[in-house]
Length: 391
View (cartoon, rainbow, N blue to C red):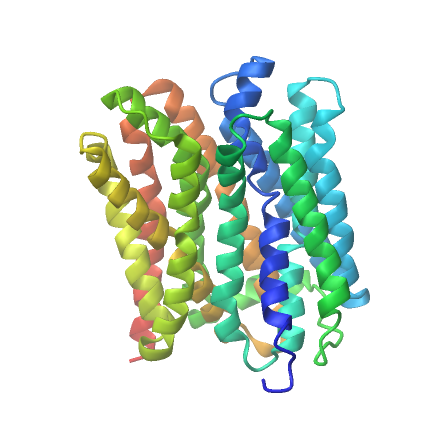
């Protein structure tokens, strides 16, 4: 909209990036912590799941008590950015304990519930009828925030892993301050609907919403498990082929390239629709899941090329599924509908990540990503059904 100051969208995008950099900070420094603290090899699954559980509980409670509606969203964002930053760096001062590490990551995830979804609400308060275009950029910011700790870990390779925690925490606080100082509350801000548990089952009786939600669920089964295990797969490839790929740098590039997929998907949706874009991205990532056992035998540049394409496809459909869910949710209780979809979607990341963590201990690593294929297959079936309704 013309009257919206030009600074608003870039500031929200940067602040989302800054806040969500807390998300995978634990994964980026995990190899160093494992060596320093003598942790078990499959700790990546437990640490990632701790963040997810915190986020799931946080989103549910934030919706249940209408936190972002009852209080100023910009203040909620700042508060959660500060608390998330403190949870992130707490392991620097707490005793070296695996339990405390998991607890800190859980609390960080809980605080992220007041950053990522609330950032979306802030954007909608500014761009009420024109949110679709901004959505690709905001999800892209999540991608960059997720990838950033890997870059920081690479650039600060000569420093202690504590520098990564300090850097991401500082960035999150800066992002929170910028939201309050430069963005504030949008002109379209109003009290939203309350969370209505009785309506949870009713929303899935609407075919269009059910199909788009189920497509999103399939996407979520694959997404965070792929991100969490990207460093693990790169390390496996190095060991298998005697190569020396920089795990931190390539983890950053493979995850960060997804931002291009998000933005490109947003522009493509203007021509062919969100449903077709989501279907095509999901099909590509599903194929890569299926052929993943063979990727380890490819030369480095071809292997990395496939991983880059996977990084684009695995997240490129996310903004489009979010758009479809918003379009197909019943207007009278849209808040309830979208909240339960996000909660279920992130809940599905727990068994997915845990399954890969368990499988990595009982079978050859090259096979574990094939189990992610279940998500795209499920999602493709229901996205296809959604597309058939539009014809």
